[in-house]
Amino acid sequence: MQSTSSTPGRRTPGDALGSMPETSSASYADHSRLLSAFDHFASRVTRWAGTPMAFCVALICVAVWAVAGPMFHFSENWQLVINTGTTIVTFLMVFLIQQSQNKDSVALHLKLNELLAANKIASNRMIGIEGLDEEQLQQVAAFYVNLAARARESGACKECHSIDEDDPARPGN
Image (cartoon, rainbow, N blue to C red):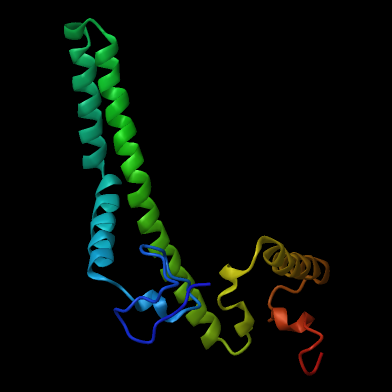
């Protein structure tokens, strides 16, 4: 788990430079100028990369390369140009897209955490479960599989339930 800093803008020794903060810590609000600049750049590039204009630019590049083929006698160097170009673009885009995906994932978790915290029936234990390991997540998923099976059997589709119902340590269970 990452260590947190109570002073915004300061990183503690446990924080890895460029790492995405956990939603269960306050360090998600801790941003350096470099990380903020990269985040804005990554967001702009990934938004642009999904536009029809970006597709058209890529298509034109491939068309120019294909038209140039006969001039270069379809040589190995001609093929190397497109292979190298696409490899470099793909390699760099992976990191930009992952940065944007990480940010979107943290934002989504925080929104869901707010909904859980604001709902009187929902279990606050569900907040931050993205930090659980695979086996623990499977146990939580099994609760909801059983809940769905109970709903199918009883025909009840408008009941409120919480994972806390199956917690023997919780008072009233």
